[in-house]
Length: 109
Image (cartoon, rainbow, N blue to C red; front, side, top):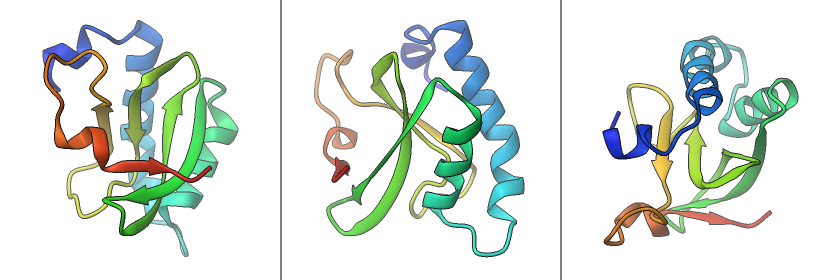
């Protein structure tokens, strides 16, 4: 994990990210799991998270999580076309230059 992101996290946000990393493989292994079902499960048990539905790369319907008290980060437990587990993405507000991540996640609701 990038030190730039770690420096912006509270202790609780880092704990939540670690919990999501630990539990996601079990949720993905369930029958009929999807990015939406995984996000709904985490939203229902972790009060600090809120689920969003939208598109990834303006192509793929997708669901992800954000922290209610820190909207500068995306916590994506089931990232599109990735192997390795959940992602914690800085939306770019704390970066000096924009990154492609700024435009990949588009909220519908």
